[in-house]
Amino acid sequence: MSDHLSDKPKRDFVGLADLSATQLWAWLELARDLKAEWLAGGNRPLLKGKSLGMIFQKPSLRTRVSFEMAMEHVGGHALYLSPNEIGLGGRESVADVARVLSRYVDGIMARVFVHEHILGLAQYARVPVINGLSDFNHPCQGLADYFTVWEKLGHLKGVTLAYVGDANNVATSLLFGGGKLGVNVRIGAPAGYGVKPAVLARAQALAAESGGSVYATTDPLEAVSGADVIYTDVWTSMGQEVEKAQRAAIFPPFQVNARLVSAARPDVLVMHCLPAHRGDEITDEVADGPHSVLFDQAENRLHAQKAILVDLLG
Ligand code: CP
Ligand code: NVA
Image (cartoon, rainbow, N blue to C red; front, side, top):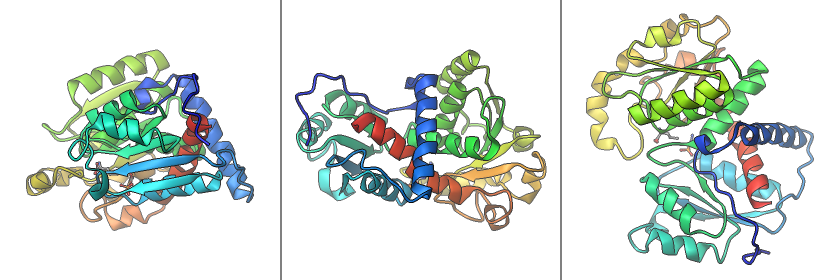
């Protein structure tokens, strides 16, 4: 049962930059423990009777299914609200959607076009709001990705992660999460598609506190040279489809292929948040090759988000 009269302040997950490093590590450790329990066949009903409303203004495979299964594993329920249903900010104001949903569910997860809609939901909802991707960031992805790197390498501090391609929402979350966790994040992006100055400045400030670093270049080979992790994402994100042809002409030198991978460490991990446009930002050879951890990343969305849900809705 929802306790809408609780005076415990609700907490949201809007972005990784808002979390303390302590909180971030607590979620990573909880994700590890919940994954181990799941592998041993013993999920616990930690959110028995709780519900999550999931607003989707854009398509999704991983976010939708991993959140839905995460709630099921812990004895709760998830409600999928499709792009046609709510009309966030159109049929009804963001504030009213937040107020109404807060009367029905114990938490809201939202995937939106405009980041301000996440902020509006968080402001007006009386229940926790989780950002399931906006045009600005994708923090659930970033958390799951650092969980994956930690799981594979055994540490995060001092790891060099090179993101190659469009400095988009996913790149922002990798920069902020890396900044909190002491990771050396390099971004290799074409001129005009690099990290926005405000994002770079914030990431640099976070990295200065954690002992990590941030470096931006327009040279993909320089970005990946000696890296522990190479990360890429689509050249055209959801909502940018009109720019597809223009981007397709600019980004090919940033493709993650065997030649680029050979410039990194011999045991480099290759990551992609998926969905992938194979043959564009990543070749089949690399996506299906020995360095690829793409599907472990996808699985870890489930475990990382279960940790977020258990903490925020529990
Ligand atoms: N990586 C990711 O968020 O995938 P979906 O768009 O399928 O949810
Ligand atoms: N940058 C991509 C990520 C998809 C999960 C997009 O926003 O479309």
